[in-house]
Image (cartoon, rainbow, N blue to C red; front, side, top):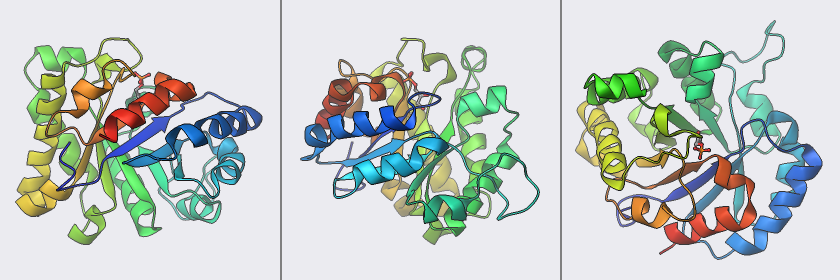
Length: 255
Ligand code: 13P
């Protein structure tokens, strides 16, 4: 982290976990544990949990995010949720292009870009996910892939809008596997993302960009990962479902 240059953001991604009543209970449990955080604290929750989560987080330092957004403003898109629906419900952040959406739901670099633009145009903060598979890493394509995914996701995003973008480097092989990237691998991957942003927007904008690491980050390894210059926070899956674990990561980012 380099808090002199950019904000540190710890975001939970609950994925398809927690009912509305469970969401309320977990947030109530988390509130006192993270109230003195020296970083931004975000919980990205299932759509159906949003009203309960926004209500539970009211008056606290926890911001609520969603886990996806559709790229059209409205229309015949059965089952989808627009950016305006999210903002009106009190959502401030949205995860876009998570590898699970790329793998299971046909998300492409193009749709990631369209969703990012829709989110930013509606005033949401976009947490855009990029990351290589193990096969791509072993073939030596990590840098190429991360730079490509980053640039594709940001196509037509203005320099001004970039201020509302966070990029999360999530190596696919580290997600939900218990295999964390080493701190050096995380720092390197995040550095590739920052370099791609510098190539398009210039060094100053790239230095101001928050780049998170995600993939089996937990209470035990967060401090070492966050100590790296390019790791400005985390996108946390499993460990964000337990209040003490999530709070410990927030505490590590608050130092
Ligand atoms: P885990 O922390 O469970 O590995 O998940 C990471 C992730 O995918 C966050 O978006």
